Image (tube, rainbow, N blue to C red):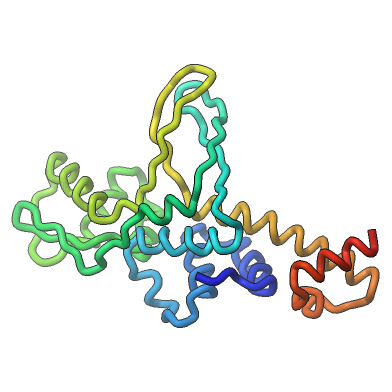
Length: 232
């Protein structure tokens, strides 16, 4: 996975300002993977999206990933640091053609397109029902709580990257819990920080030398930094 250029990074940041996080992730992958048809990206399993977004994030920002999670007991913010390169190496690619057979029914893995269809669901229970119905193949099956729980477990086993969890413990109250690692949110936060640094560099260099934004962004990071150091 190749990192985005400075021009692509700013274009993504600009285009994503009013987009849903799902759209931001797919926009990023469309830029990073031009060989893939954009409309097909949304039909890949959720874990496929997360793995490739993490690979893009690592290529752009390195393997050190820092973040925080809110303790569900006392609401304290707990920081975490992880090796995103090692995490990427541990995540298996989901088999896109895999099927789960259970109680006479079959289901495929959920995709980004499926997730988009449950954004307006009234509650989590309704969202799960809509998602599983969209992923069902063939004849209807029962929808008992036990079947739904077993089905969710099997789908997660096939695509663990779709729901990455981190073991956390609160240093304030001692609460232990599993926090979801939102790759898209981490990537967007780092992208935003980088975009603002680039815009500041453009502002300073344009003011000092009268250069166009495109010319400044075309400079290598090393040359851009050298010129910034010269103007103080």
